Length: 132
Image 1 (cartoon, rainbow, N blue to C red):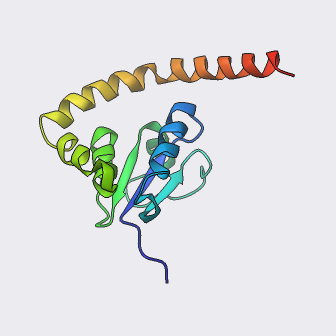
Image 2: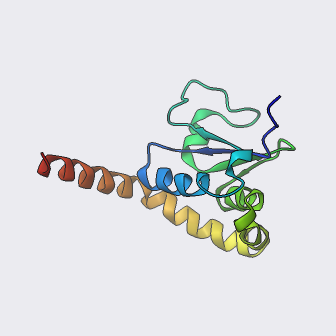
């Protein structure tokens, strides 16, 4: 029987920056205990209580083993608390006032994310068109 996940991480794999970051976490010790959900690939999936597709794609979320849903920097703190090499970061980042400051930075990131996504897509397209 499969061991239940300690955490479910919901991320936007269609956003290259997010995909790279999640790939990094997935390569770490302890990542096998996390259920990784690429919401961009699962548009028609129900993501559980209080998490629809629009909400899930808009920012990072983590659902802990106790079903508690956390998002943004608080979600990252939850994720980090499950990864052995990152637990200290989870403890630090998940506490007020640190999490509040991180949330302000995350809000800025979310506002420029569409611009970043277009810029990354444009660079990818340019690189593909210049290489045979």
